[in-house]
Image (cartoon, rainbow, N blue to C red):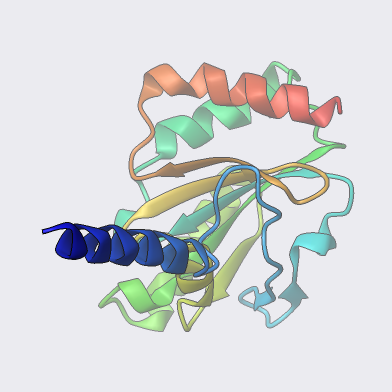
Length: 178
C-alpha cells in the first residue's frame, strides 16, 4: 500500500516540477523577450520602449472589444487626468492572429481602428509565439503589466472587471515612480 502512494506522490511532484519549467510567465518573473512587427513591417521588442512600464494587451481579434472599459480607464488616467506619466508608460497591443478565423486583411483593419482609438502601437503575432511562450490562453484577451526592468507585475486573463480598473491604474502609477 505504501509503494503506490509513494509513486503517486513522486509522479505529482515530478509533474509540478515539469510544468513549472515550461516558461509560463508568472508574476515576479522577468518577461522573456520577443520581436513582432507592426502593419508596416517595422520590428518592435520590449526594449523599443526603454525605461517605460509596459501594458501589453495580447488579443484574439474576436475578443478585441472585451477590455475596452479597462483601456478607456487607462486612457483617461494618462491622457485626461494626467495621473499616469506617459514619459514612463507605454500601453500597446499584440494581435494573436492564430486565434481567429478572420482573414489577415480584416484583422489589420480592426487593429488599425484600435490603434487610432487609443493612439497606440499594434503588433502582430502570426505564429502565436507569445501565447505559447508566456502561457497565455487562446481565444482570449490578456493584459500583462511589466515594470521598467521587464519583470512581470500583473497578468489578467479574460475580461477585467471594472472594479479592478482603479487598482491597475494605481499599480501603473506606482511602477512609473520606481
